[in-house]
Structure formats: structure tokens, C-alpha cells
Image (tube, rainbow, N blue to C red; front, side, top):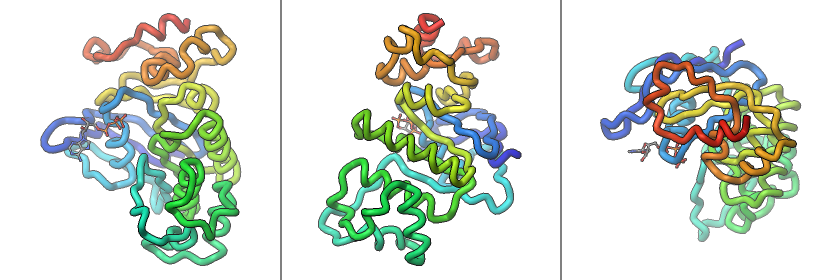
Length: 250
Ligand SMILES: Nc1ncnc2c1ncn2[C@@H]1O[C@H](COP(=O)(O)OP(=O)(O)OP(=O)(O)O)[C@@H](O)[C@H]1O
């Protein structure tokens, strides 16, 4: 069953095209990762799906009453503002103690309820944002580079938590990640975005290959090289990012 379907989605910022004719769908329970260079429209895509941005043309069809949980790329909270995790979870809408507790448990943050938001570590902060996204018991969990700034063990542990959440809730996950090992290990499908969908497919099973180690941690270009590009799209010649690493991985 399709949870979200994008049909020829185009989005402009200040009149400039950022996304053009983007088509794809997300089905129940799958993990889809969006990769692409900086400025390629990944955040714009996610924010369009949650309804925070209006398309300039095309359509976003959501399953009726679809519950979406969203973990933003960044959230700034004034460090001088006294705010416990528990109170944060009740902003802007009050939630019961049991709902808050369940969400914190699921996010692996059970012990953080009484902590001050301003005193959390980066990894703890991300888990609290995850807990907030889980309050609505989402059918689709959307994460925008949720592990930015975390070290590798911190980020691996965060994505392990995401996998646990998916197993518990049966939700689909749509995420942006630049981390090759995450994309490799955790995605059912990868979408390569560069203003349009360059290509999409299953991640390669190359975790043990020397090429994988060579690509690991090489950032966006490594991530773009991760999976097999089927260069049979008519727009491929317009694609201005580097596809060479991919050939090295084959
Ligand atoms: N509110 C805005 N107003 C004007 N331009 C914007 C706005 N938000 C994003 N843009 C522009 O749209 C383009 C796509 O931005 P977006 O944040 O979606 O890219 P991204 O792929 O998520 O980038 P990154 O990997 O750096 O996070 C960029 O050129 C950006 O400058």
C-alpha cells in the first residue's frame, strides 16, 4: 500500500526551481534514503511531503489520515530557556505522561524526561526529537540528516534505534543521510536527488568489498556512488554530479 505518492512534484524557492518533476512513492514499512549533493533539494522534498511547503506544480497524494512523524535537520532552542524534555514534548500540544513515556522509551531516551533540553548531548537531543516525532504513533517517519554532528558510534546507535522503531511500529521511514554505512545497512531503496530524481534502486550488497571501504565516509560523492545507477533516463545527460565512483564500485 502506498503511503505517499509524488506526481511530477515541482517546488520553487523565491521563484527559482529547486525540485522539478519529482516522481516516487513510499510504501508501508519500507526504509527509503534520499542522497544528493548539498543544495540538491533534499530538505525541500521532505518539507513538501510533510505539507510545510506548497508545490508550484504536481501533486502529493497522502493515504487518508496518514500520521507522519518528522525529525528536522536542526532545531534551535534558546539555551537560556528553562525547558525540561517532558515539557518540550508537550509543545505545542499537551500530551499525557503515558504517551510521553512510551515515545521516550521507543526513542531510547527513557531516562531523559526530567533533563533540561539545553544540557543534552547531541545524541540525546536527537533521541528527544525522535521521541517527539513518535508521539503521533507515525505510519511514516521522516528524518532529515538526523545524525548530523554525531560521531560514528552515536550515529550508528541512533539508526539502530530507528530500525527498532520500525520493527515495533511497522512504520515506513524516509530519511536523508550522507552516511554511506547507514545507507548501505539500513535502506530498502535509495533515491538519488539532484533537483530531480536522477535514479533510484536497491543499495548494493558491497559491505565487505574493498570498494565499500574506499567509499566509506567519503561524503556525498561516496553516497552517490553507493548503488547501481541505471543510466537509461532521458535526463541523465543533464545530471551534473559525479557518477565516476560508482563505476569504481562495480
Ligand atoms: N526558504 C528558502 N528560500 C529560498 N531558497 C531556499 C529556501 N530553502 C532552501 N532554499 C534553496 O533551495 C535549494 C535546495 O535547498 P535544500 O535545503 O532543500 O537542499 P539540501 O539538498 O537539503 O541541502 P543540504 O544537503 O545542504 O542540506 C538551495 O539552493 C537553497 O539555497
